[in-house]
Image (cartoon, rainbow, N blue to C red; front, side, top):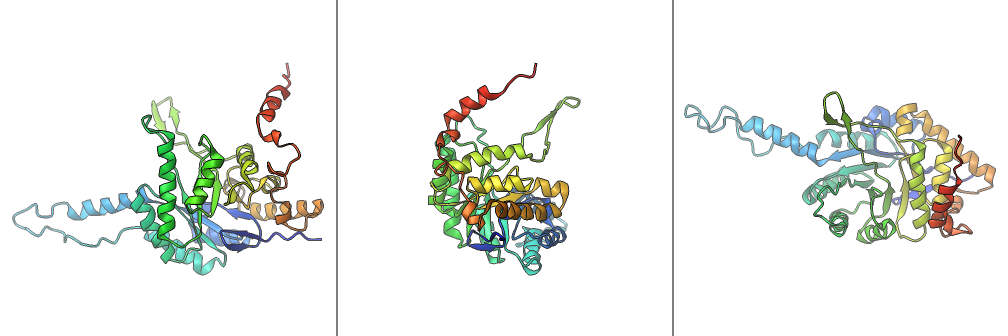
Length: 335
């Protein structure tokens, strides 16, 4: 017996549900092709950041405008005032074009905007370049104490609705876990136009350098422990919301992928393990998933999906307060 790993995600037919997520590995064509060679059924490109594009545009504008109309001897300026600067997401679009032309698997673009106009503008540009789907990587820090949760949530919903009205692409929305009612928020995002929810975005916290007394970025790759939070919410909302669900953060091995699928994930996404161990890790996770399904007597990944979700387990309290109490009282001190 050989279990059928075929998975449908964002309207795309995938050979299996283990997908490389946005990371430096999907940021150049050589790594993309290596991932495809290792069996990647699709790739999610790194995020196109609106701030980077805006910064480049302003830098070129400043360089070309500096001195213009500033000298009587040269009333037209020493450099021409161009109406159309050759700036924007050219490198990213080149990557999209090459991936579409060479990778032979669906290409999902990732977009991280900062303004409503930026989200819609670049969504349309990416659609025009033929990406198969779009992942909206929403990274909002509610840093203003005067802004309430309702306002923050409405900004998410308005963003998704605006992009949904602008493009016909399948839309995945990558969110963080910090909502007071995550399940309800997921359903509202589905209602606003999301086809899938990617759970969860990792919010990177800066560190403190005690030698320089400065705040500095500090990237720490994920660990399998982080999958616990993802699994919990997958299990709670699977079958109770109208979107597909993608698991990200903490998928390092085949067992992690199996657990996420049993909780309800449509696909499982990997980044940190691939960065650490290379493309062959994807092959190992895919094959390990297939072996586990065969051993368990599952005919397909679809049969296994959600079988340990909130609505499927005999005692759903394991996902609620009862589990909290049991967890706190289960640890035995070692001294």
